[in-house]
Amino acid sequence: MASTSGVPVKFDKIAKSFGVVRVLEELSLDIQPGEFLVLLGASGSGKTTALRILAGLETASSGRITIGGNDVTDVLPKYRDVSMVFQSYALYPHKTVAENIGFPPRSRSAGADRSIA
Image 1 (cartoon, one colour):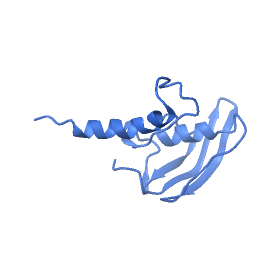
Image 2: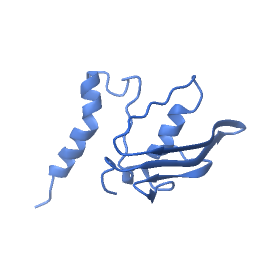
Image 3: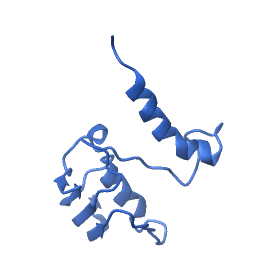
């Protein structure tokens, strides 16, 4: 899939349940290119679950996700071109906040430079 920067993202009635616990109840959001979105809510309100569903790390119980108009609801994470930065820097504790945030784009460009001759 092409780069997701500059494309709209849509949560269309996304719901998620873990057993009998309903974490997301038909979340619908249209995020336009250039918009800055902040998800606020109490612990357990579904913020991280929504982002994990967008990234493909979690499957929605119902609804769909589109990126740039393409339905990615059942697309593997590696083909979505979406990254997450966690509140805790535990994934790379030896890096600064800036290094943690900059790691995925640098990794992507390093992978693009590798070619088989």
